[in-house]
Image 1 (tube, one colour):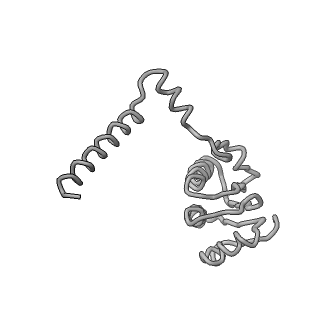
Image 2 (cartoon, rainbow, N blue to C red):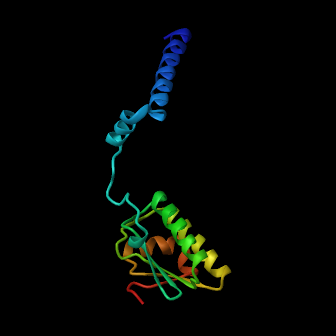
Image 3 (cartoon, rainbow, N blue to C red):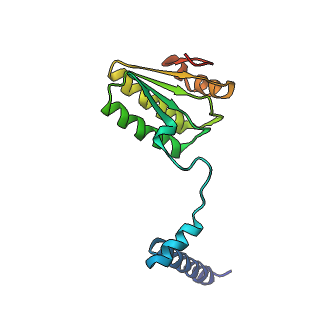
Length: 154
């Protein structure tokens, strides 16, 4: 293809993509929001209810880690736990990995951040109900040097 033909084709493609983006970003009226709801896919585990993930017992905050601890869930747990730590007298965070079978680097970062907050406040962080897969991730990441890890609950 010639350069002018390539430019013409890419220009029309980018123009079409811009039109699609404008339509999806700015829906009009009630029918636009209804269309957005139809196109919205809800995956299992997307709904976030604090009671499902956090439990406070005295000065202990137990975080029930979901089955998949990815970037989105790590961010939600981070915000929720930080809010509870700030508003309550939390001295220990217990991460319960009983349901967890997947964790990526954002989960490691979320745990490290809570560890730093707790250490600054004189508290502690532990991990309980850790299966072999999660134990391996925690070991390879070096977190095991900073927090106590238990295969069953304390």
